[in-house]
Amino acid sequence: MDGIVTLRQTWVFGERAKRFEREEYVERRSVREIEFEKLRGVAIKNRTYVFTLAGSRFTYILPYETEEVPEPCTYTGDLDENRLSTGIKELDEISGGLMRGGIFLVEIEHGVGLRYLPLLHVMGRHAVLAGRAVLALLNFIPIPSFEPEAEKAKEKRERPLSVVYPEETYDDTAVAYVREYERLKHQFKEVLEIVDLDAIESRFGYRKAMDFLIDAISRAFSNRMPVIVLVKGGMTSVSIAPRLASQHIVLKEMDGALLIYGVSPRTGLYCLVPEKGKMRMIPVL
Image (cartoon, rainbow, N blue to C red; front, side):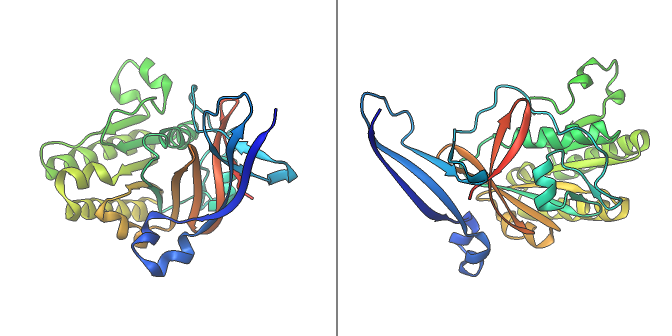
């Protein structure tokens, strides 16, 4: 097989950097691409791929697809008394894990779609393995469930996972959420919260989303449990939420690959890759 390919190294920028020049350095990351311009006798399905030289090997990254639900790494307990594990070894190493009493912000850029769901699944599943409950405020029905065994529970109150959806009014939504939080806390002692701010902002507006976020921060501080907060590209709250977060990662799509990097703490660029039922992070070097 012969043909013509082009290798290049370029910069990718976070979506916020396009609007705020002062954040350009914080959002800029280096990435490598390979472009297949011509391959003799072979149909080119995708012309460009992200590639990496990690481990002194040339590896191109296939478009992110997962046919099976990824599981967390082998449960080894909390990282220490102040940090919980995310369930992904590499993410723990670069982010420091989930800080007790803090906000773990996940910024989801355009093009990612729902491909961030497996990441939430791993985090939620790991919390369940640790004997904790998971409470999520979402804008859609989560598929797959964080906890498959939850479907086998005879009664809803036995399940460690609970999902709250927006009600007709903001007050009804907030009351339903807090009521479910207190129920889970009474039963499981500790509750990992996952809050999709888009569920509030798209229905009730930016100010209500900020009210909900501030309430979540108060619970995180008083109960010494982390809260995972999701913000999506184009939302007004994406400009404020990072200022309130103790940790901040970004999910980005490029050439079909799902990229992840840390803003706080600042990290390099990684590719999320499902492998043998687990989720790996490969550095883009």
